[in-house]
Image (cartoon, rainbow, N blue to C red; front, side):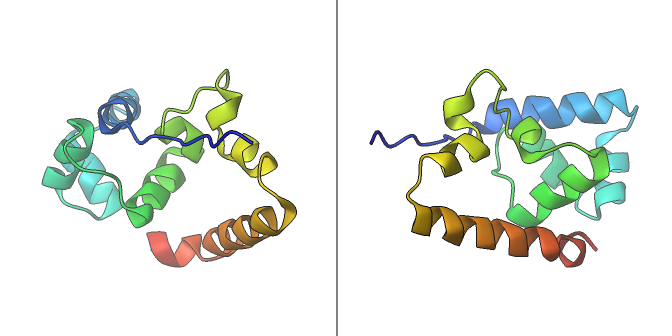
Length: 114
């Protein structure tokens, strides 16, 4: 089976975050206040200078009401790189393991973004 790795593209993630922020008519400072993170962190995300932490990824997902594929710029047409498609390629034990982890992350998402 071919190993398909999803590469993190900070520049593209930054474009998505900036676009979502502008759609909401927010400044970097305003978004930072809404998310409870620094304005410089928002600036670094938007410029692709810093990778998203899992905590801030969840904050952004929750605030903008989008999924991780949207933020991480995984196109619907690129099924081979979507999270669901990657899970489908795993053997049953690995798939169950990651589904459990994702489930726990989602169950704990409120604590992460509070």
